[in-house]
Image 1 (cartoon, protein in one colour):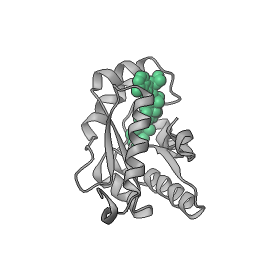
Image 2 (cartoon, rainbow, N blue to C red):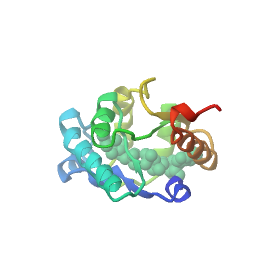
Image 3 (cartoon, rainbow, N blue to C red):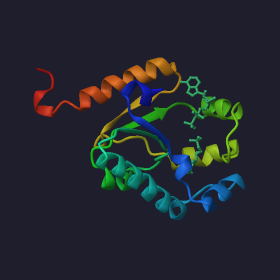
Length: 156
Ligand SMILES: Nc1ncnc2c1ncn2[C@@H]1O[C@H](COP(=O)(O)OP(=O)(O)O)[C@@H](O)[C@H]1O
Ligand SMILES: O=C(O)[C@H](O)[C@@H](O)[C@H](O)[C@H](O)COP(=O)(O)O
């Protein structure tokens, strides 16, 4: 939805996991840093290639830790992160009600344990997942547009 509004391409980072990561998650085991680094590199490369092709991309990605986002920023330094924030109970309810190719709902708790919210020094925005999708897209679109204005020209 956001990609459509921005006229960007969309990619789900789930599609960039190597098969062994997919097998691991499907078997109910959480990934660790070791398994995530090659995946994050693939995500970063995808974003850098999009940039080279002058194409904006919305990447749906569980870039849970600051260090993971640093890895992505090494490929695309001005990446804008949208932190979809909300209580675990809400996410639990939602993923219980969906069909996912490989992620069992039992892995959710470990995702929250790894989660590091966006820090002050990170380019991006936090949005509340209990808002409607339309409202979230609107908020993000405005934030992306505002972030595109050079700091020296803001608030004039
Ligand atoms: N803002 C929202 N309000 C209500 N339901 C939502 C919202 N965002 C996502 N959902 C629902 O939550 C479920 C999980 O969403 P999904 O897009 O699969 O999440 P993920 O970000 O983990 O890929 C889906 O059924 C989706 O329709
Ligand atoms: O780093 C990880 O542990 C995985 O990337 C993991 O986060 C998985 O990809 C998603 O949780 C499942 O995909 P959804 O984003 O669709 O829930």
